Length: 162
Image (tube, helix red, strand yellow):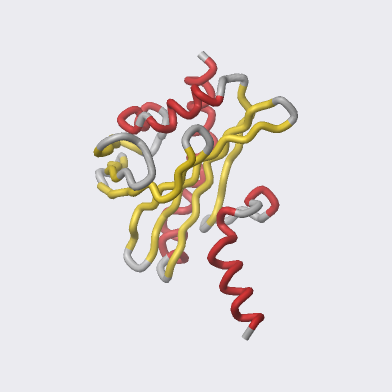
């Protein structure tokens, strides 16, 4: 019984713990960039939802209702015209946030976070699929999203360092 509990616990918490020490898959992947920009500049870019389309190469449009904070809800529209609702489910101002897009019997999570290491600033964009349909959705969209991520991160870096 203890082994089953530990296995379930690892499945539940693993997407956000020690991502850089895990192997990336189309179900869970991330990209980190080092920047000379300030943490405030990266944070402003990340939380200016209507401007997400300026750097996220897969988006046509994005919007939110209210201020960007825990519980904020919004919509994103893909280049193909798919509209998805999202909700900010984890938030620490100036450090990190996670938003969730509901999928049938699961969800798509996006976590963006800032880290200072040895006097340098790093910013990371992490994505994972969770739930009963995670495998199917990661198979359908994971590879495409994963391929776009480095370009997305370089665009953020370019905007922030101007």
